[in-house]
Image 1: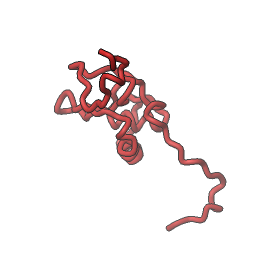
Image 2 (image 1 turned 45 degrees about the horizontal axis):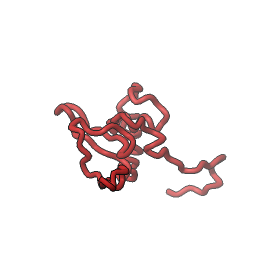
Image 3 (image 1 turned 135 degrees about the horizontal axis):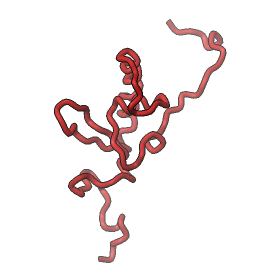
Image 4 (image 1 turned 180 degrees about the vertical axis):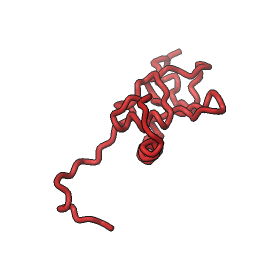
Length: 113
């Protein structure tokens, strides 16, 4: 049931990290690591299963909301999750490609070549 705001001693702004604030530009993170980072924890912090479920409730919508600024990599192995990282500012993919990029020659300063 909704509760009157006056019932709470203090209210805070609902601010979330941007991907640039949360991620290192050359690193990829699992949704579990993102969940920890959003709470100010280290990506490898030990949390119990119940806490992790609550953290994921915050992390999954954050990933969806910030999808335009992220890249995703499929799991390297069948027993691991996918990885997310910054779309811009990170290292190129392992094959050196720029999948999905829309940067043409003019974007890299070689418009005259």
